[in-house]
Every structure is written in C-alpha cells, then in structure tokens.
Length: 211
Image 1 (cartoon, helix red, strand yellow):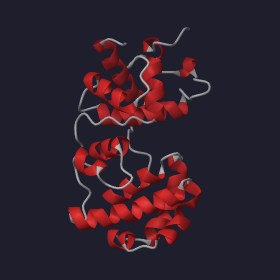
Image 2 (cartoon, helix red, strand yellow):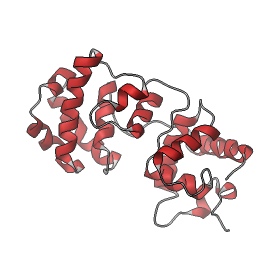
Image 3 (cartoon, helix red, strand yellow):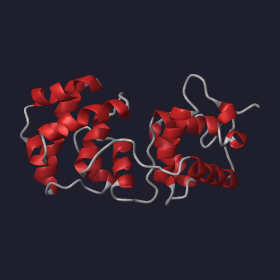
Image 4 (cartoon, one colour):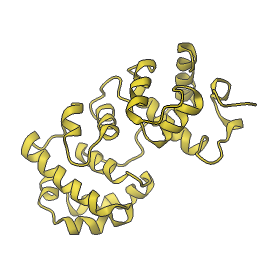
C-alpha cells in the first residue's frame, strides 16, 4: 500500500499530467449521461459518442424515450454490444424517471441504483459529475488495474471493496476527477497489455515499477 503522502503526490501529479478531468462521454442533459454510461458497458466511450447524436436526435426528450419502441432503440444502439439489454434498460429507466422522480435524475446512491441498468459504478459517476458529491469513486476496469498496480489497493478485484478502500485514502473533493484521470492514464500509458512505464508520470511512486 502507498502511504498517505504518496497518495497525495499521485493525485497531484495526475492533476498536472491530465488537467482536464472531464468525462469523455458527450452529453447535454443529465439523463443523457445516465443513458450513455449504460451504453458504455463493455463498449468504448468513443463508440458511444458515435451513436448517441442520432439516438438523442430521434428521441429528444425523456418522454420520447419512455414512449419508445424498444426494438427501434435497439437499431440505434446495436453497435454498442448487448444492445437488447441496453435498449430495454434505457426505455425502462426513462419511464421510472418520469413516474417516480418527476423527470429528474435522482441524486442519491440508493435512488440511482434502483433504476433499471444502474449499478454502483454508474451511480458514482452521476453523483460525482452531475451532483459533485465528495467521495464519489468510479471503479471501472482501468481503476481495478491501476489501483492494484500502483499500490493504492493490494490484490483487490471486487469493485465494491476497491471503492471502499479508495474512499478511505483519496481526498473526497478530488476523488471524482481522479477517477477520470485514471481512465485517461490507463488509455494513454498504463494499458492492460503493455504499460509504458518509462513515460509514466508516477512511476517513482508505483508499487510495480522496477526500473
């Protein structure tokens, strides 16, 4: 495990290396981010951003999504993979948002995870990006890989355990942005197959760097 001082330094260096810590999914409305995150499961953000303009143009309001034919939504999201389940969840989620939340995306973990197709990863992203809730920690494949490699956690694979462990050590006001920076670093430098350790801004703080 890294010390508290090392964790603070990793956070600081990532802030310098990746000053823009925005979500890489394109959206204009809160529910559009919610739906885009659902589409991004087992799919790249780049692919999702390619198909959502047409999807959101065809169904411009939450009411349009709630009334949509699931098979038509499937046609728009087909290239994202698992398209049947994703289309079904998006339509059902729109209906629940209208029926139970007045057409607004709710702002608590309990309410979010009760929505169709929404788990803790999605809920934490919404809480961090939309509601700016301190301590929001998104655990995706990049976070699982990098948190273990760097030594922010030791041998943890279960997202819920990693989330809890990171919440204990990350500055609450920086945790959401840190998660976005982890994604950027995982794509650009510390990928799954061959991490580019020589060009890593935190290699001197990384538990697995042997150079």
